[in-house]
Length: 338
Ligand code: FAD
Ligand code: NAP
Image (tube, rainbow, N blue to C red; front, side):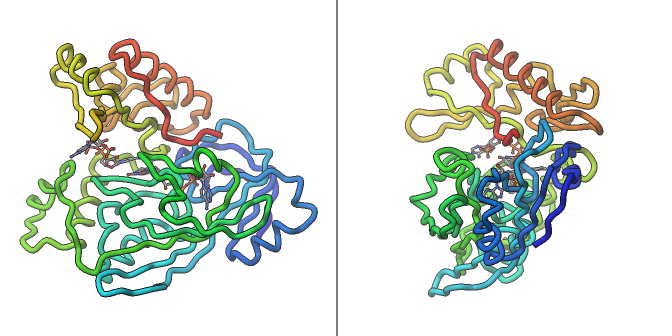
């Protein structure tokens, strides 16, 4: 365990916000976390949990104690004829876990390659990309209740995983620290190549024999070509969720905007591509000071160098208002704001 005071969080968040934490406690083992939580001096402290910092926009200095979760370790905990169960510590880097599994032929996570951040946050918003969501490979997780200081095991149904949602983002917000997640992977792969540009990229790569390694490579290539690299330009990925509307509203919008991008979901709902809506309002590539909208993907807001969190929020509010005015659709933020 390491305790630091008055520390800049700039290296700890991919938006590159230069806010300060009054106190940051770095935890590497579950046992030391429990011991520390039980110290009497900690009882009055309010805590903020930080993983890889890739889905957070800091708008102010942090008075709460920042609990930086770096619990490591990856192990096989169970094996069946068709499945393998992998338990990973919350501080394990997500992409390195994906590649660990891909290299061993354990299938299910390959479409989720190159998502930044750590294992512990993967259930927080049920991370998703290219037609796969965390819930497709989730088995269970362990978390510690920050006040009761007890370990709780959550099964899939307990987590209420939805589109970029979970019980931890809503009902249990701020109450638990996730310490490990166990994933159920397939020994016999079920390939998912029908989404976005995966098939096209596999053809461009000249792949003859499909494999999970080839899919992971294709996903990485597409992501590198489209998405801003946080080491080059501050961002937290998609700033907004793709809005879901009723099918009748979609038909009305289609009459007005024939090019509108939407995907039909179950129960007469349609998911609109928020990036397209934002682009149509003229925001793609927009820059005001150091706050901007990425030139290749309008869904991603960026910090060119020294933007403040408040400037990014102000830009997001202008975008929300213009999309509402043009399309009558309300965008919601995906990024966590502190
Ligand atoms: P953090 O940003 O550190 O934390 C996020 C939230 O989870 C905070 O509220 C924090 O308090 C809480 N939290 C973190 N760890 C724990 C824990 N152990 N216990 C309890 N609460 C915790 N997301 C996708 O879903 N799909 C994508 O394709 C995708 N692409 C991205 C691309 C880029 C370039 C970037 C920058 C981001 C992208 N994201 C994507 C968003 C982000 O990478 C994920 O949401 C990721 O899971 C966040 O992990 P983190 O460890 O960085 O979380
Ligand atoms: P894209 O492929 O250009 O597609 C644009 C949008 O259309 C995506 O948001 C996606 O929704 C939706 N879409 C595309 N094909 C679809 C299909 N066959 N069925 C249903 N919906 C479809 O998107 P992109 O920006 O390059 O991102 C690619 C993937 O990575 C997407 O899944 C995206 O969610 C994910 N991603 C997420 C983040 C983040 O921070 N959350 C950042 C970057 C990329 P979905 O978003 O619902 O998949």
